[in-house]
Image 1 (cartoon, helix red, strand yellow):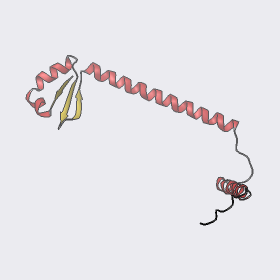
Image 2 (tube, helix red, strand yellow; image 1 turned 180 degrees about the horizontal axis):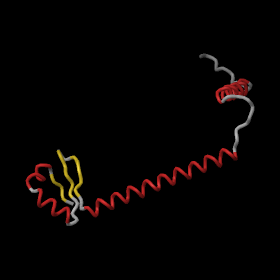
Image 3 (cartoon, helix red, strand yellow; image 1 turned 90 degrees about the vertical axis):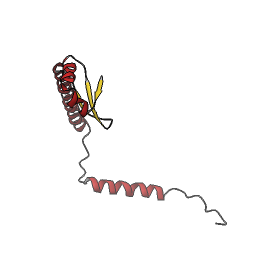
Image 4 (cartoon, one colour; image 1 turned 120 degrees about the vertical axis):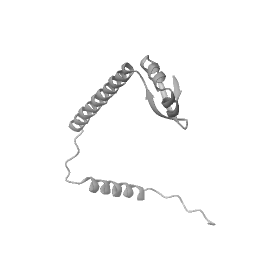
Length: 112
């Protein structure tokens, strides 16, 4: 892999293009930071194919997650007790606080 600067590209464009068309990958950097890749058309097509394959895998994964969501919703339906989620959470908190209040408390330490 060859690394060139934009100035090098301006000076030796023909030579760099010949190298890239022959299959060499060329990284263009400005201030030691990569700004572009110069690759042959064959490599560029392969990158596009890999991108399409990644997109297809991602879409398939999303489809599987949607199916799992539907299956879990069908298996574990929420209770129909007429409470909203907020009301249920408030009720649970109160129930737990009642249990905590009913526990024996340790004696307070003297001298504090």
